[in-house]
Length: 435
Image (cartoon, rainbow, N blue to C red; front, top):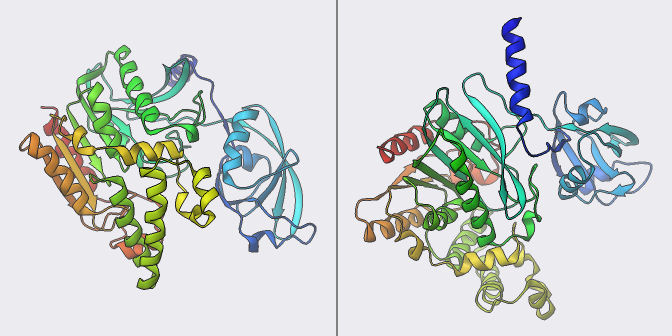
């Protein structure tokens, strides 16, 4: 019992130091409700809603009587258009609030009151997990750190994640590849850092969806600068782990804060406009699209990119001229973000990276190509011979799993566990990079 009391006291003390209020937690996987699901209602007709494939035990949703398979129709009387409405709703209401949901279960519509609890925090008996925050341009941004046992200083891995607006602070009940990778690093003697995007999770600041590419890299840079206060972090042995778009942000952040090495996984080293054309063609083929249709669709994509990326028109300006291009202007980030990415000369950034770099691509990745990683490796080595290397992971997809082929991955493979060959290769490189 004394040991339990001590653990509880230490845990409470750690939480008390957290300068950023914890967000509300609903506790369910979210998906757009299909027209077939909504048509089940025999009481009223609904056009939109949020499907709940999985409600987590002990969550706010579960304790409010909501079950896996339910459809959320309205919240406090307002229609829910899709999963994108839930996050802002929870952020606005906050932990401790009650929300009245209309729920479709089978063919019946019912009312459920959900009392919002605080989001759960990650815990571990193997190492310390610290919830902190960095003041970035006057707003607190959530930072989650993992620290091996001992005083340090420890080599440190900084996560630089992929494109889009999502939280790196995921409920422990949910599978999360980034977390599994970072935990593996900490089990092997590395501290790790996750810097939340603006407005996501607990973070304050403007909505992530309004950020440009250089807004995002600025936030990452300022977040890394804030690590100076953690004396157990050895910034001379810092590794940037860039996944997908993070493989583009890593060399940009390096210009302001050099590091001991960069791991760039499932990324691209070629011009973005060229990348989009190749990626679209690859995925249209995997989808079984007739080849004559593929060329027509790519021609339309080329027109949209010319207007957006070369002429720097806004989506509204483009659609005013040609509304048929709407589907080719859909991105998981603000259009200014994508315009800045399209303007990047990656070679100008990579040539200034005088540190070991590991490029990694899975053979089942249908989002990027092996050749793009080899090209990026060659850029680095052209200016700093022998600094960069490339590793192909047989059967790994874009999300670190092991579906085996692009076709299987394209059909859909939810994350369950890391490809067994991936982390050992990355760890071996990182250990060499910090020597």
